[in-house]
Length: 310
Image (cartoon, rainbow, N blue to C red; front, side, top):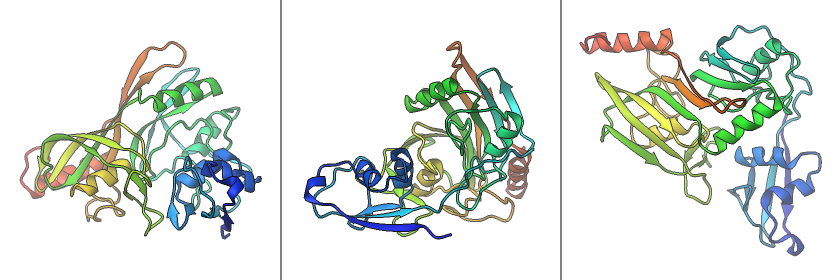
């Protein structure tokens, strides 16, 4: 099903309005919140260029909106096995396997973590039928820890913690080459790639959002390096885009790096996460070991390069 394309010219009396409010007023079938997601996804342009939801419009601007196809009205529970690391009355911490999409999206209408959660918690209601309990996300082919809220109050509390950057997220990744310095930060705005809409890219501040990624080299493995990565912000594909931009793409990343024969997905794992429990405010931290496929990849590289212990 094709998207619905609308072209709207800004009149003088509409000048000064925010982009999201302007198009929401003219497309009442879609909420302002949904439009913010559509804009963030790069499906709205102003005078042929991507723009932020907060952009103030001027008279004569041409706004093109590509509304996504209608989404299904029901999310079905599916009995998909999930590894629950922690559970209380407010939340779950799940160790997501690679290959499992977090929530329904174009091309992935079902068989997602959201479907699995609905099977485990059929009465779950956090105000978003399409993403029940989902507070943050991991890419389909990224494994590791993800938090799922079990009620609206916990969802709001955890969402606020992410907005305040109070959640500690630590990833382990294998990259090509040997980064210099051994420990540092990558700071560059990220936005939708104008040439390839399914990709993200380093862009200017006007068309991207601030993003900062901290890294530390754990060890070198032949021509590769194992890193600990701590993103301060949570932009789409942030770690993968930033590391590729400095010449050290994530091993196995088919979008921003190079496919390798010894791994069927990107070597990126959400290894630790720390946050405050909504009910008590107590800080907790959880850890996930590297999954078997990533361990095997390290062992193979180590053997090929004569690195003791992989």
